[in-house]
Image (cartoon, rainbow, N blue to C red; front, side, top):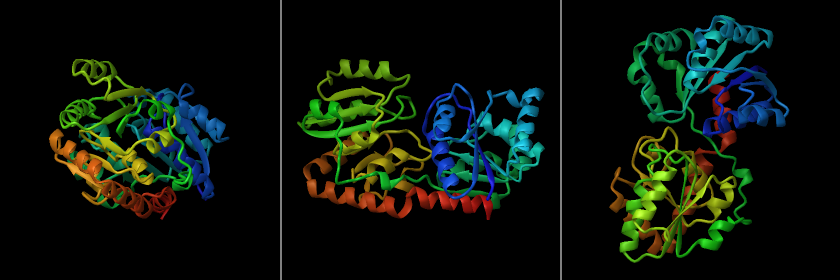
Length: 363
């Protein structure tokens, strides 16, 4: 088995960091020796320590790869640890870890790309993708398309693969549904949910128009928004201005997403783009039907009108009509929820996706 370094120095805890830790632990169960490279101030560092993983401390910024002392420290770490493969995801880490691993003679240099946005065709990126990376793993076909958009002339296509994220369905017990107290106490009518960082990309602003339309149609509902971010103040102002305080409740950051998903009837995702909408998989795994926009990778997860509804982008009226359909037809809501879970069991089980990732890297 191999010595695998998961290289992630991002200082906050997000989906990418959660993915790195989960993948590292799954790789460990497969027999690989694991080391995590992280910033001492990052949640990933402390969480890795709690799981008794070997951790190497390193601070990395966007230009750290230009610092010869920091670059050499990274090279020396790879050599001293006898690392066989290094895996990273962020732009800043790709430059530092990719170049250092190449100079250290690491055999497998793996970029797990989760951002469905074009990559600049800079001198550094062309060198990185042509001469350093041995494997490029996209989390969706849309992400793969964005990787190749500007850099296809320097990328060997046989090194580019799509591996979807997976969810640990063994931890989801549908017979024992814990309910989030905040929702149980304040929810009225049909319970709608949205979860994610409160940013422009996640498009929570569209929820205002959706709520106004549903209210106009006389639907009794409560929409709970889980998450925090730089759009929080603006969203609260919009809720106040449109007199939607009884219909929309902002929960802030929710630790127990299992209880959140168990507490809602329909999950809404209004993102403007997604590399891979993992939160859709989380909802589907719990038999919660979903409504989202027909953008980027969403159609790779959702089978329209079978496991969820895909509305034309920014068409909040059509989006709302799909919610009304699920409200009026409880059987359709149940059937769609069950179909969603079956799709998760077929396509998005974490053990299957981890084995696929392992095969892509080492075979």
